[in-house]
Image 1 (cartoon, rainbow, N blue to C red):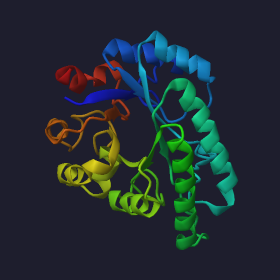
Image 2 (cartoon, helix red, strand yellow):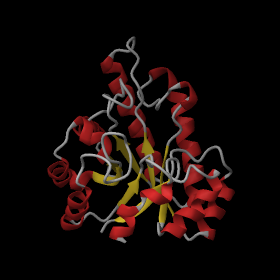
Image 3 (spheres, helix red, strand yellow):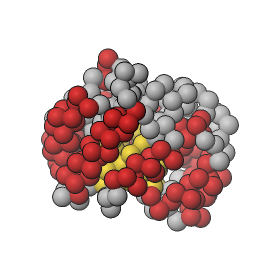
Image 4 (cartoon, rainbow, N blue to C red):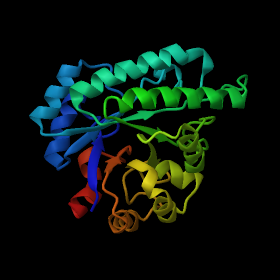
Length: 259
C-alpha cells in the first residue's frame, strides 16, 4: 500500500489543532500535512512533530485572505509583492519543520482580469517561487482544483492546465500535486491519467466523490487506485484530505484495512 499522511485541517477536527498530531500518530500515520502553518509558531509545530515522530509532508503558500474567500493569489498581478513575501514566509516555516514540499494555490481569476495577464503573472510567480525554493532544496507543487463544485473560477482546474504551466516554467523542482477527488470531478479516468503523468507527480491527495468523504462513501474504487499506485512504483506521499462522514476514528476503516 502507499505511504499515507493525514491532513490535519480536515481530519480530527473534533479536537484542538495541536492535539491532532497525537491522534494521527496513534492511528498509525507517519506523516501529516495541513493547509497552512502560519497561525502557529514554527517551534510549536516542530515540537508536535518531534514528540509524535511525524514527518511534515506539505503545506501551502499563503493564500491571501482565506476567510474572505481568496484561494491563492499567484495569478493576481496586483498581489505580486505579497506573493513573494509569502514565499519567504513559507521558506522560514519549511526550514524549521524540515518540510520538503510546498504547494502553490493559483487563485481565482476575477472576471475583470484578462486571462492572458493572469496566466503570465502566474508563470512569473511560479518561476520566482521555484527558484527561491530550489535554493532550499524544496519542491514546489502545483494543484488543480475542481471548478465545478468546490471553487468556481479556480484558475488551474485540470491536470492538463497544470502540465501546461509546468512546461512554461521548465524548472526541475516543480511538480504536479494530483488530487484524486478534484480530478475525479473534472476528468475521471484516474488510473490512466496517473500512469501518464507519473513522472511529474510530486504529491497525491484523496477523498471520495461525491461528498468529499472517506473512501467507500462514494463512487471511486480506491482499492484499485491504491493498487495501481503500487504497481506503477509511485514512491511519494498519499494524503487523506477528506471530511469524515462521522467521527474521524470511525472513518479510518480504509486505512486499517491497508495498514
